[in-house]
Length: 299
Image 1 (cartoon, helix red, strand yellow):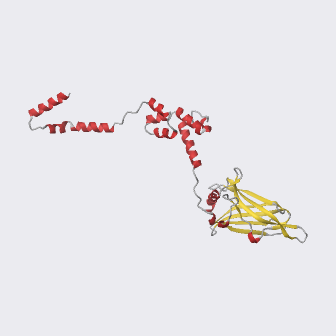
Image 2 (image 1 turned 90 degrees about the vertical axis):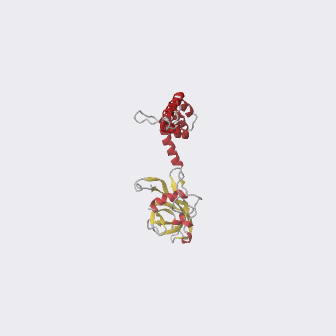
Image 3 (image 1 turned 180 degrees about the vertical axis):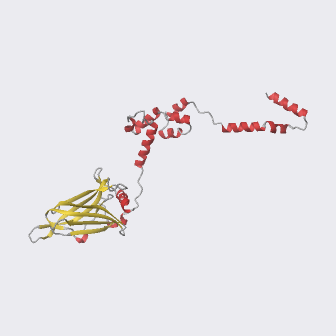
């Protein structure tokens, strides 16, 4: 083939002395060379046989398998086989590996693993810092006798920055009554009205945590407890219960003062308020409580 081209060029030069070798090469061979070069650049190397892909896939982790499946349609087919993903599904999410499925709602193991993995990441995601702080809030607690047994009532306003967590780190605070003294009534079972409001400073918003009546036994050294479910944050807050409750505990002491009839009076001298989770009935953290309150106070 090469000798034929050489002879062809020599013949043309011999027949027409004005035609140079350079001009002939540029006109006849350079365009063909450019086309050949472009074709080689555009051609992708051939994909490895699917048997090799499947063999390699057995040694890859889920993340690498997912990335490799994006290379091409053939790689997607090789890397998405159920027999590759079932071991990962069984080890990471065993509760999903044996789900019954029919032909109408069947889902590939790769897809099921991806859905479960995304859900797990969302659960592990650290929540955002609350937009509220305790310094933005004022706690208003009111306790009064619900009948005519006397004793009147008492209200305390406690700025958030002066609140002390009890125990530390949880949304439970001792509001007390300070030098004002507490509600004093005769010993015995009495009905009281309890109110706890959380106020955004400047009275910009008010959220009622608790507003109820109940009976407690007033006696020296005794305690009283009130709990009421809180609404869920969001559009359904008025009709859907949340997983937290408002909690109030009262502590009592004996009064030195006695009634004219000789009966002993008992005074409520300690009040603590908090938010309890119904899961395990433990107090939630301070940040968790602030995130809950901001749904109602930062509207």
